[in-house]
Image (cartoon, rainbow, N blue to C red):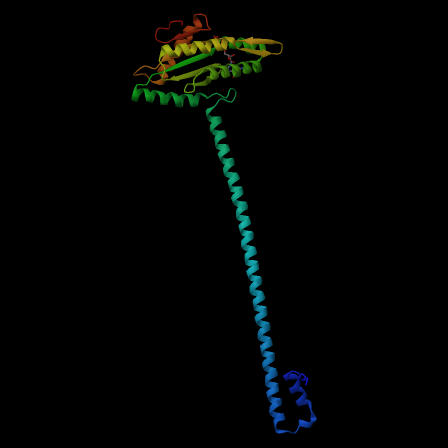
Length: 268
Ligand SMILES: Nc1nc2c(ncn2[C@@H]2O[C@H](COP(=O)(O)OP(=O)(O)OP(=O)(O)O)[C@@H](O)[C@H]2O)c(=O)[nH]1
């Protein structure tokens, strides 16, 4: 036999309490009170559930917004780190450029007088401690004033650049060629006595003699005069420069386009 499904307990109680047939029974009053208490309990539970739901969604929201804030700050930190990296790279580049500008000649790109003096001090110190020989050559372009006067200062500058390039290309890696000033260059030859230095400088002289600088349809040739001096015990590097200068003067006086040595001032 098929069983009819009874309605839920709450419906049945409501129906019983509403039924006029049971109004005056002793249980009606008690059931009614129990029913009210039950309804109140259900309301409270629903309220607690609502509060708990609200609290949970608030906590979730907070969690989400905290994660968002952390992510945002991380992104900002990454941006700051990138800017700082770029800034540091710029500072390094700037430092290098400043160092290059303070130690190199702007026109020819060769080491300038300051860097030459630094290296001269180092070499004379090495000489003092370990008696390692070194030589200095002072090089001056012959009749350079005529080139400026004839072709103009700009062509004069081009000639300076070209002579510098040839000199620099001809020396060894450990030698140093720099612009001493004006149309004068200094070559420092570490571990080199005067005999060897004179061979090197003769090679340089010939290389410059072969050089031609184009000026429109014409071309300009130049020669150099060289004064050589090997560093001597008891001398300062300035003494050696002065001796090389004296030898240069001798080379100029004896006809230019030649190298002269300081000790004997013999024309090579
Ligand atoms: N274009 C140019 N000329 C320069 C520069 N520095 C110096 N000079 C010129 O170089 C010339 C040097 O002339 P002088 O010292 O009289 O010597 P010189 O004409 O080379 O003659 P000698 O050295 O006696 O053979 C001067 O006219 C300077 O103006 C430069 O950077 N550029």
